[in-house]
Amino acid sequence: MHQTYSSVQQIQFFFACLFFASLNFEVFSPIISNFSVAKMAALLYLGVSLLSPKDLLLVNRIKTPLFLIFAMFFLMVLSSIIHMKSNSSIFSSTLFFNIIMFWLLLNHQRRDVRVFHEGLLWFSISSFIVGVCYFLNIGVTEGEDMRVVVFGENANGLGIKMGVGALYLLSYCLSHSSEKYIYRPWLLVMVVPVISLLLATASRVSILVFGSGAMLFVLLRYSKSKFQKIVWLLVGFLALYYAYQIVLEQEVLMARMELTIDEGNVSGRDVIWERYLDLIKEHPLLGVGFTGAEDYAMEVFGGVLSPHNVLIEVALYSGVLGLVCFVLFLLCVFRDAWLSQKRKYNLRPLITSMAIIGMVLSGQALGVKLFWVLTAYAISYRIVPTTTRLTSK
Image (spheres, rainbow, N blue to C red):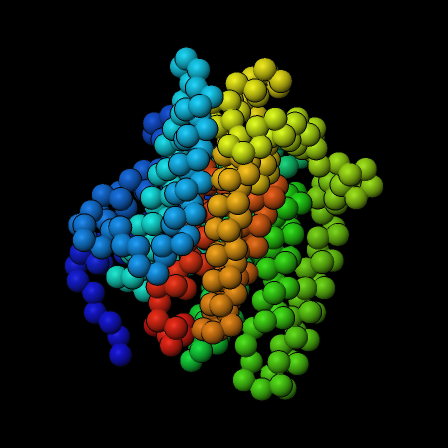
């Protein structure tokens, strides 16, 4: 039986999907400087969300993750106040806004079960469009290291987004629901430019994200019989082997992989980590906040420099207390992603959560909207009845 939706719900659903699609353009600001397409879409979504004011800020069944992430943010602000100097910012509006969007999306899922299921499909289609732009050389730049960037997105961030788009498409088409496993297989054609762009970014973390997600998909995809499972595993591992051969042919990527393996080269991150860890040791309980971290970076590095590791970043801003909150939040995310696969045969939160690991360990996350979307997607397991399995439309 199909659920009917009101005109307000349809409008909200459309702008939610528009927001999901905009995530591939998070740094692209074609009209106003520093006002990206993703930020515009987020504000539009926030505006239409106000049409359902009673349901915006519900907390039942999601109190624990919400408490943990708001506690982390509170500790960051508190530490910033303690280490405040003149003209220092004690509040990260970007991080706060992302947490609010995380909350809004979860409550939107209560009202409309299509939000993540179809919204992330819009994201995957958007990834395909970016891949086509790469083929057509639209918005493409290539750095001195031969790594490709499209619409100004960081190569690692771009690669991770392409990995998530490809993984979601694979699961959407080949493990769609408990009633219909194969669904719209023609959509898999869109994976080709997406993977091509992922390889062109020469991002090591993106390859690991996509590879680990694809491996989980092959190993855990549900089959009705042992024979089907064996056939699926054979086909899956053959596909993975073929993909591995393609990766070996990527000269820029393999050169970067060899540097990591042979020389332990992590693009200078080890030096950055060492200096920031020294500062954390001096202020272990509450860290130094946004203000102290910025002042320290200006003094040591001559400019604001990301730690390129979110665990270090959180400890830097909020100390061990904030780090414990963040790690417990991540444990909630991965637990719910696993239970979604285990109890509802929905693999998508689990395989896309590999991108969460990638963003946390080697890049950016707190200020990245996709990180909060994927964590909300996993946590959404809590607000769907446990007897409900993913079903086709």
